[in-house]
Image 1 (spheres, rainbow, N blue to C red):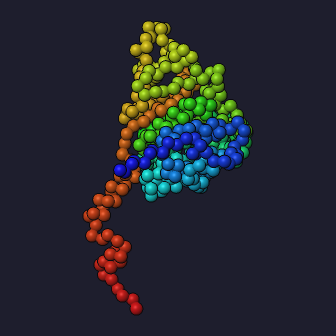
Image 2: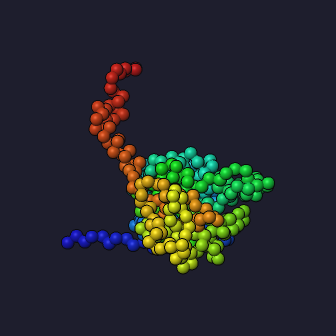
Image 3: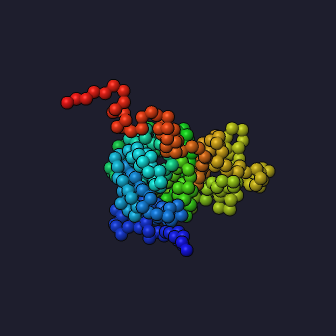
Length: 341
């Protein structure tokens, strides 16, 4: 009798390397690394089929710290390398680890196009709103007026909102998480990995050296109940310590209301629909900012759409069937040929 092989059950240990993690003590990268190692056993049954690809920056050291295949590529080019890896071997679970400088600046063009193409890969965007590895220059996400090594009088550039950029590039999955909530990170990383298409997770990461507490007004323990709203598909958009606040649509805008005041009922609160193909409300959620609104966390958008590598493989197969030439040898001996002696 032939027995079926037991399904391999992985644990955090299967993805853990006995190697020194060379991020600064207190860097948000440690919590992100821990959370992704907890998520991977739920999304993969073989570490050899997982690959992490990074560009340049503090975040891009990630492949050295996890027991999977990895590729430390060039500045801003992780998405291009990852595209080739996924197309060459669609069975691999491909993760791209990048920073706000690596992806939004030199890699900006590659970033928007991988989202537009919708390859089945996962992007972890460490957003600490600074260039950390090169010692504190302002990045494309540094707030207007931010004082840095290269903007001693304050930046005069409008910052990118990564989610807004993603929506404009027709991203099928966008989520946002804070680095001080490991449970939320793990849950969202699992959802990102299971999404069919390009998933982008923006992580509010703290840099203790060059932008310490940059996200404190959102992630601080004293304020996060009122300054964050964790979105879950199919559930009312509620926040506050006792879930007493929520969001409604009034006219063409979102509005913060308090249940029980001015006749507002629980039934009036907007229900989150992350799978809506029309991104209008999702776009508004992505753009919410303090002090008028809480910052949206969790999966904001997750829609189904054809994935690039599957369409490419199908197109190649169809073209091959119609072609009269099926190999390089046939090509070289087709048409007018000449024998050179």
